[in-house]
Structure formats: C-alpha cells, structure tokens
Length: 246
Image 1 (cartoon, rainbow, N blue to C red):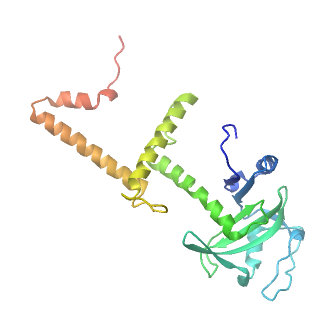
Image 2 (image 1 turned 30 degrees about the horizontal axis):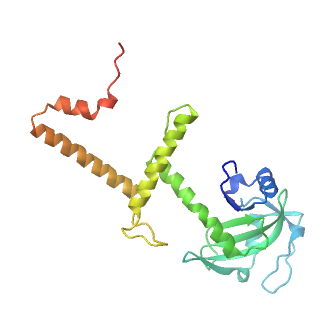
C-alpha cells in the first residue's frame, strides 16, 4: 500500500489469520483468502449441515472445531473441482468464525475416496464458489517454492550483515540469482503456460559444475604456461586471504 502496488485479494497461510489483519483488510476494502487451522471453532448456529438424505445433522454446543465437523460431512456433499489440470473433491459452506464474522469454507481432498489429509480454505467472500477460491489461492504457491529454493540453494537466510541496507543488498542479489536460474529452467522456446524443464536445485548444480570446470581449466592452462601453483591459488583465493594491517 505504501508503494501503491495495485492488488485486490490478500492470500496468506493460517498463521496470519488474525482478527487484526482481517479488520485492516475490511477497512481497506480488500478481499482475503487463507488456510484455516483445523482446531479453529465455528459457530454452530450460523449454518445447517445435512446428511445424505437431506436431514439436518444436530450439532451439540455453540461451537464445533473444523476437525470435528469434517468427519460429519456426508461424502455425497463433495463435488469435483478441476484447477490447472488437477482435480480435488470439495465441500463448501458459509459459516461464522468467532472474531472474524461471516466467511466461506472450502474443504478439499485430493482424491474421490476422501482419504488422507485435507486442506481448509476460508475467505470473506461468501459469494465465491470453490473453484474461484482455490484458483486464486494457488497463486500463492510460487511464493512458497521461492522461499524454499532461496533458503535451500541461494542462502536467502544465511547472511551476517547487521544494517538494513546490507541485508537489502543481499536479498536483491538472491532475487536476481533466482530470476536468472528460473529463466534457465524454462524451455528454449517458452510459451504461455510452459512448465519448467528442470528444478532450481538442478540448475544450481549445473552452474556449480560449470564453475568448477572453468576453475580446473583455468588452473590447467596456466600450469601449462609455466605459472607457479602458489601464484595460481593465490589469484583464485585472493579474497579469502587475511588482510594484513599496517
């Protein structure tokens, strides 16, 4: 907002789903979608859950946790939703969350048998369908993969600077390196929707191999020219030599 970046929807994970953030989004007239922790409570008087025959399912108490609600949802209530060539089986419901008000939930399984783990999305837009909610939230996934690749391969969190300016320079170098590596991962003639042909890790390993090859060839060439080993290594590792004070 400070830099006037245009956006309409906030996407965040369950750790950020707090009343303060939701209130700010409402004040700024922004929509939001988040993952929902499975122990979060729902107000039972805000919705009606029906069994396979269409009869209301009685829920005890003023609140029910998401993880207790999901087993009560009849399998016939789930519908397949396909996004980016992947199909998930979803159930959606408008409910009230304490402190957050009226929201829409989307419970999503990866298979038609409704087995294994499931994800629960929540949004302030009770008028949106499951497909739109999932499609929008998946735009957040590249951010997760960037942080994983940045920390695993590019040292995003391995810096020893103390000033904000120095840290910012380090981050910028990581971003630039990631951008070049991402381009290296794309096919020679990328088209809209093209998928990478290799991972960031594979690209990093190829670049490291190319660097080692260049170092070995450099040392071999200068040894052939009669240069001393000490001079070659002194040049290659000059920046690692201790600075002598005068």
